[in-house]
Length: 402
Image 1 (cartoon, one colour):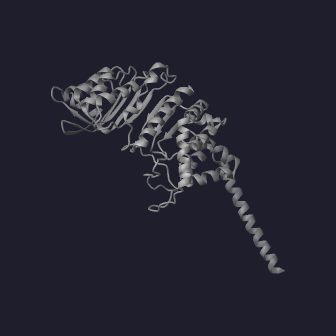
Image 2: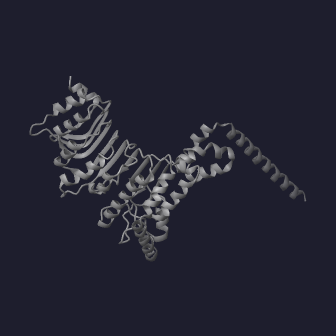
Image 3: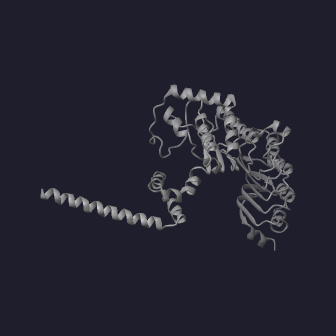
């Protein structure tokens, strides 16, 4: 009897100890401002972050803005029924929907051969261990993917999503993020959907996805300010994907709101550069209010291709120009910069081969960059002039022109 009473007293003391320290911890947490709690919560892993929000109303309310920022401000999805239905539900939510600022559609998809080139990532199957492939399930989801695309439901869903997400200003196509719904497909089929666009089927599919994005943005009436078509290095899109003859016959509701455009292109080596440059230029010129243009080429663009671009591009509001991945004549750059000298404030050239022959002049280009243009930021990174590596910033050019 005495032993039982002693054990009960020990348990009571232990409970009092933990209760006391929980109360002290609660007081300490309550003494922290919501801003401090939000800063601390930024460094907590997802699982712990959710547990933290469940521990008290004060912590839940203090981290609510961070919760919206982390999980709803940028939504990354693939063009599958399962993935878009999730995003559609979010867009209908009275709080989560208006919190969406960016929608990223990835290139992940299923292919006819059922193979994936995706690398190992945490949460997927162990490295070098092939997961069991459910061929029946894979075929069902592959057929669903094709019917979803052919029926036009993907465009309908994405249009409604963009219409509901009234504060969404950025729309992107990319392959560098892991989309919501991809892990679900892996669990169902044993294959993680590929993001490669190297095979013929994938090239056609990504062209269709690009058209879906443009059509949805147009039909939704969304006020898109930034468009990024970036399919990743080593697997960039052919500029012919941007051929939209029907867009020249209608007024794009977002043509007057788009101010930033990022394009990563990969024309075929044996393709006539004068032919593919036209749809690229025509697409860029659809947006006359562009202020920021990022244009990079994954496969090396030859001089004639850039020459066609430099002579055709005329954007009256262009402030920031970032270019990379091509060879050109110095006079072509002079022409392009001169056409926009009243508005250009930032120029970045990355991995550009510049030739001053037969009649060009590096000094003429340097003089323009240093004296004639009113740029506040100028970077020439990893470029070469007549085979000589050049890396310059605005201060370097100012010194060289004195």
